[in-house]
Amino acid sequence: MSIARNIKIRSLKRKQIRAKNRDIVLKRPEFFSKLLIVLNAEDEALQKHAASVFRNAEINVLYPRSSKQDKSPNFCFSVHSSDFNLTGNLKNDKIAGLLQTEFDLLIDLSDDSGLLKYLAQSINASLVIGTLEMAADGSCDLFFDKLGTNSEFLGEIVKQLNQLIKK
Image 1 (cartoon, helix red, strand yellow):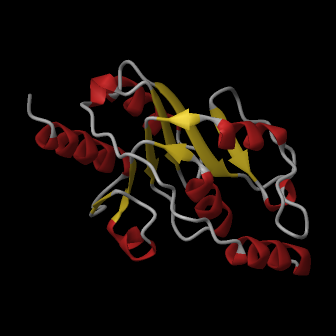
Image 2 (cartoon, rainbow, N blue to C red):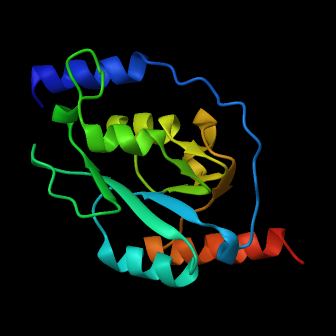
């Protein structure tokens, strides 16, 4: 890992994202209109599965990329340490637009990536769902134990949302 990348990651870790004062909104899966899934890597199969489960939602994904150049398609956002300057300020306009977008639901399936964690905490969402391992940082509204694949975890989220909202 380069010295510049280490400095960027430390700068992002030092930036404290204050807990947003927001109203948490629980809905049935078919009533979500804008969804963001944060992943460790691009996963087209999961995107297709999410589109079939959240039929009326615009599905967006955020994942890290290995190269400096962003070639991600529409509704896909990829991040690299080169998208931040040395002090941790964002330089990528596409990611800056993502931070300005309001989402109904954010599902964080990422591991302990400093870039993804910082961005996930910065995004405006009415409901944030994460894995049980994220319970300690307090960034998520609902936590579920991740057993199996991402698609299975997504299925569990849908099942639990339907159980929470019985109408």
